Length: 262
Ligand code: OOG
Ligand code: MG
Image (cartoon, rainbow, N blue to C red):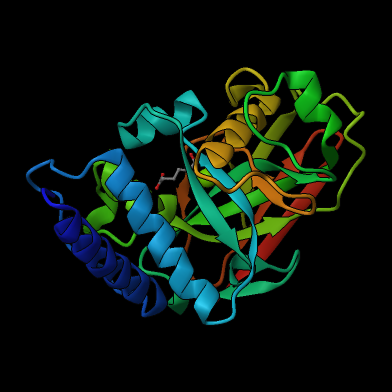
């Protein structure tokens, strides 16, 4: 990506490629084979692909954080915290269902989610971040990389909106509850497949919210009241299959789940 003209052409082209792939549940080949995509280019592609969703009538509803646990970093072989943008069409009703055919090769991971009651931007402390939280909830994220074999470089996954595909939120709870180290399990058809803790998220999930506030503000999109922030997968992600019921159970916070519809 050399001249500014070439940059904007490429951003538009890759944003369309990834957005179409997501819409049609079709995989694409990795395109940064010579490692030339910068992180700024990658976030520009992500932003342009989200602009296409918003132009189709989806609403922006928040932010998702990625690679905030060691388990996820190890599973995907990448170690930098990344973020993506959540839109209204990604939300799956708690206890509802999502069609398997909407996805290329979906995986699920247990997370904790925040909903904000006020704007949160820039370099904030943990207590400042907590003061902006309206409520917390157990959550599931469905990640579905658009890249063949779920393989990507760091800029590629950023361009692909950090593999965002769907999310499920359990009941909202009072953030006064100490959610820094809550045990959790991920189950497929009632069988526990992953065990973890909210402490896996940078030592405390609030640190993920602090990072979200900094990164979003730096991108010119400060976290807004009413926005949801997904703190990141606390365990490695699991493949899901048609017909399964997927659920997360979190100490004190309760559970959330959905059916993978055939
Ligand atoms: C990238 C998204 C990472 C998380 O919670 O760490 C992520 C991926 O693993 O495909 O959502
Ligand atoms: Mg995630």
